[in-house]
Image 1 (cartoon, rainbow, N blue to C red):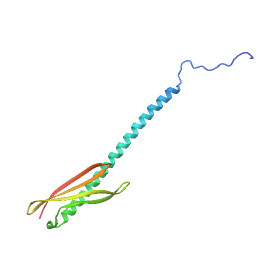
Image 2 (image 1 turned 180 degrees about the vertical axis):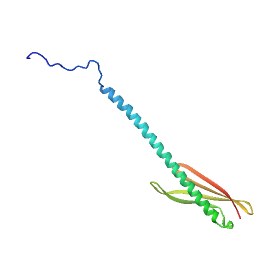
Image 3 (image 1 turned 30 degrees about the vertical axis):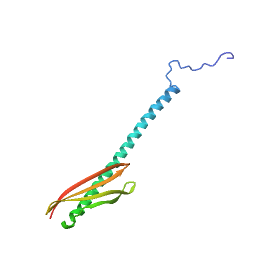
Image 4 (image 1 turned 135 degrees about the vertical axis):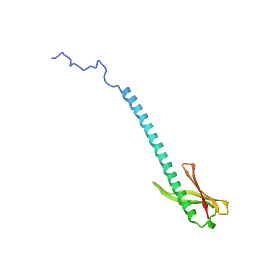
Length: 134
C-alpha cells in the first residue's frame, strides 16, 4: 500500500462539455432570446396601433352621429378640434377631428369626418363620409 498511487478517473471518450462549448451554447441561447424579445416588442407595438385605430373609428362614428342629429341648416364645417380618450396606460390621448360639409344640391350634403392622430412620431388618419338629405 505504501508505494501505489490512487487510480484517477480519466475520460478517454471525451463525452463531457468543455467551457468553450458551454459559452458558445449560451451565446446562441442569448441570440434566440433577443430575437424573441424583439418579436414581442413588435407585436405589442402593432397591437397598440390597432387599439388606437379602433378608437379613432369610434371617435369618427361618434362625430358622425352628432352631425346626423344636427338640423340640416346647422351643418357647417368644423375645423380641427381635439377629442381625448383614455386608452390602456395612456390617459388623455388626443385625436384631431375635422368635419367637412360639401353641398351636393339644395337638399343633399356630403358630410366627411377625418380623424388624425400621431403615434411614435408617425401620423395616422381615418376618414368616413355619408350623404344627408333634408
